[in-house]
Image (tube, rainbow, N blue to C red):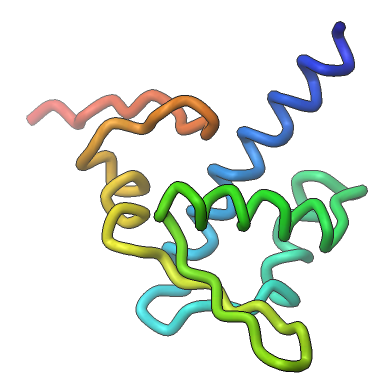
Length: 106
């Protein structure tokens, strides 16, 4: 039970990190080869397969667009909805561990 919970926490947090990485890469986009070392700075044992599984999930949610070339390289870009989630413009549905945003007080 605890292992399932920790896997869920990791999966959802990784999705948030992937969205942030894609946001920093805007407007150009980024290959997964460049994303993996960044994710591994948080989860040292992260694999390319794990990263791709989570990107596939984000693509199904229409938060990222993944272009797969014939050599099996994946190129990732945020969609309009992905940008809005990262910028806290719209609500974030379950499945992504987006931190609570505290608006700055003027």
